[in-house]
Image 1 (cartoon, rainbow, N blue to C red):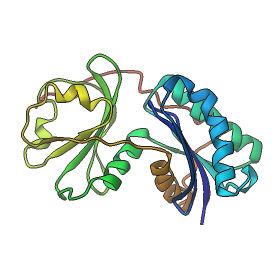
Image 2 (image 1 turned 60 degrees about the vertical axis):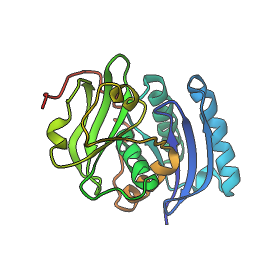
Image 3 (image 1 turned 180 degrees about the vertical axis):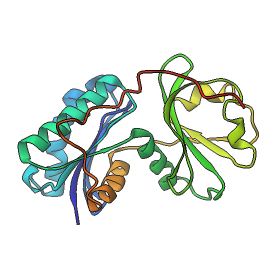
Amino acid sequence: MPLLLNIDTATEIASVCVSVNGQSVGYRQNGQQREHASFVHTAIAAVLKDAGFCLKDIDAFAVTSGPGSYTGLRVGMATAKGLCYALSKPLITVNTLEVMTWAALDNVENIDEDWLLCPMIDARRMEVFTALYNLKMEIVLPPAPVVLEKSIFNNYMKNKKIAFFGSGSTKFRLIESNTNSVFLEIEHNAEHLGNLADKACQQKKFSDISYSEPNYFKDFHTIGKA
């Protein structure tokens, strides 16, 4: 029954939670992106107090590893690694797009089994960080930076619907007209990270503390048109 502290500062909303066996027992969030650095440490103290635990009780620390905000990713990763070093605890890193996809599965009812899920993080202009997953959380299109163009996902929508969500989906909605496209309002947080981190912890899928760093996805490219 892993006791985890989960940190998500990758996007606009920062959040921290303590989870036991994947279930949140203490949670804090902050919607001011410029305050992520000042928020995270006070939030950690607050969620531990809420849950009745101390830092030394935590079995592992989990963090969203990117893509996302450069500053936010650095804040989260540095905090998690620092705690792991200080307490000799393992580190768990999870891709932000995977956390977003889990949030969609957790929040949306009546999703058809043939649907694909497409989380999108705004990367300015017409660029997004994105990926495609099926309902088993299997990767259909690997996480990558993409320049959005009309009909760019049409090959994937020949026989399936795609649910688009996340901050980057707003601008894609303005140019996308395929009848198999669906746009959802989904918010992810550290509780969703905790669900995935719990599974990773039980399988002992830990990251190397010395070499782990945020995945910024700096090099942009496009996927081919349909």
